[in-house]
Length: 88
Image: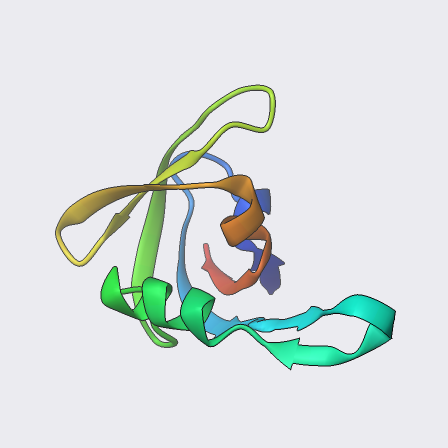
């Protein structure tokens, strides 16, 4: 079952399936967000990577995740663009 990273609850684990790096620009032109995708890759968030949600801040705050032995906090906007295959 695939979900957005922002939809996962604390304690849930999954594997990153894809990153939606395409944004709609002015006048509905599609534009690739290379900077966004590169930033996630630099943090170790690539397709096939296993992650676990540690904490989710209230009121649409950041999400703390455990990935590759490190804990990262990412904003909700970023988490909305990351698709995860949920493990049960």
